[in-house]
Image (cartoon, rainbow, N blue to C red; front, side, top):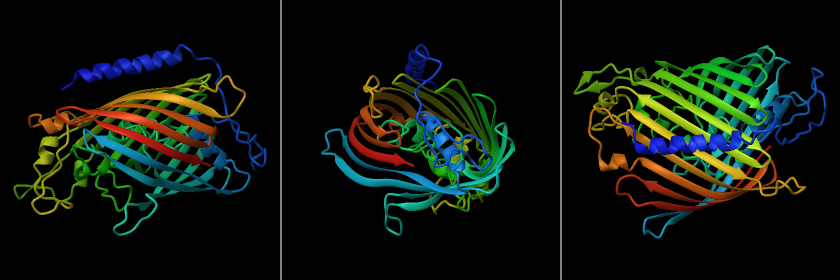
Length: 432
């Protein structure tokens, strides 16, 4: 069941794409990160020039691997203060040390590398406390054909969209990550698996993985597939998923990408039953996303569209027994289709000033619906409320590229009769 907002969002994405590509030049501004030693152990040049957005993350990681020492450490973090007002309510506020992530990278040789990230969320973890400690990445890379072919194995990020891959706070605008890339494409979505990646020709990059799959019992109308992630923590392993990404950077700082995901998630439900009888579910999950990001003379633009199709959702909600379901609890109620898209534009008003400081007003529009289409039942008022329009206005200030202060205001409008929500947000972030 496709809806009018899809046409509006598609038009917005095309407008963002056209605005930026019409202004592209052969080169964009760069940031040099000088190493203590200009040569790696293999004797190659070790001066890196990461660009903003995805590329600063990519080159920062390369910088870690190309360190003059075998083992390097670093990380990123963010703190935020949020004020939210729903309808005529007085509103609520929250101050939160949202996350701190520390990484350890190690070069075993000139072709075998290790990379890991350990994350602490909400400052304190333990029984009755809001936070948790988790391994976000833990992987080995084996370079087979220089840049063209690398084998990756371990716990790694699913390569869908932009923010799931490049989510360090100085990279994205707004205090919180884009809603579409949290509710439609989960963030931070990682799985245990193995695959290949590389850049066979300049500007053309690929990734292809076989990995652990989602658990459909975690799906929900409010969060989509997000809570189906098990983070490789004794995750069910009765089925596998395949994920792939292809991206092209025709001009420095301008990247277009296409990602896909497929799995038969049903076998990860153990002892599924309907009316006391065993039920064999397949629950095919198919996802696709397209993205664009560009930067030219102070102008930054970004757009993402993501779509997921989930099969057998009618059978899934009929479950009345399975490992993980409490007595009397039924299976999750989720849409058979999920859709979301956003477009964002920012401009550095200090572009013409001789300074490394950056001050970027930005605007972002998002549309998402975790109940975009339904199978097996009629749409309710509650379903309509899952259709969300988000508008963000804000300012990003970077005294240097690796440190950021942010402020934004947002208006969230729901489908159905639910009151709109307003927010004021402040944030501080860093990466090193």
